[in-house]
Length: 114
Image (cartoon, rainbow, N blue to C red; front, side, top):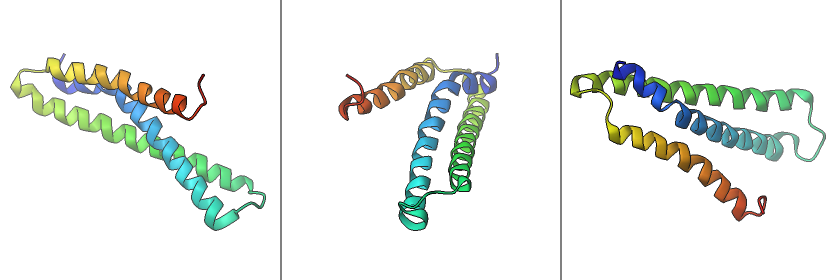
C-alpha cells in the first residue's frame, strides 16, 4: 500500500480522538459565551442548543478533515523516502493510547471516576 494511503489510515484514530476533544472544547466555549453574554440564567431557546451542537459537529468535521488531509499530504511526500516509518506507526499507537489516558486522568483527578 502506498504511504499516501497508509498515513491517513494509521493516524485516523488519533485524529478522530483529537477532533472529538477539540469539538467538546469548542462546545464548552460556545455554551459559555452564550451563557455569559447572551442568555445568562434565563431559559434558553431551542435554537441556542441547536447552534451549539452545530458548532460542535462543524468543529469536529473540520479538525478531522484537516488532520486526515495533513496525514495524506505527509504520506505523499514520504513515498520518495521509502514509505511508512516505523517511528510514525509507534507515534500513532502512542497517541491512540495517550489521548484517552489524558482524558481519563483528568476525569479521575476531578473526582468523576472512582
